[in-house]
Image (cartoon, rainbow, N blue to C red; front, side, top):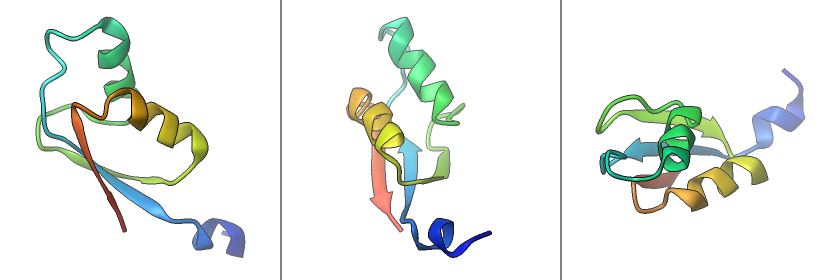
Length: 66
């Protein structure tokens, strides 16, 4: 790993509401974030692309900077 990737912030994303009943695009976004089950958390690199995905499903997830 180079120093650039170790300096990047990370986000912990937790699925707090079920995507059932929401559009197929919201379900696909939740899956693309790596979330499969309720209350499951994943850690991802903080990138503009990830922030955009999270912005689409803010009503379903909880985000923490770590």
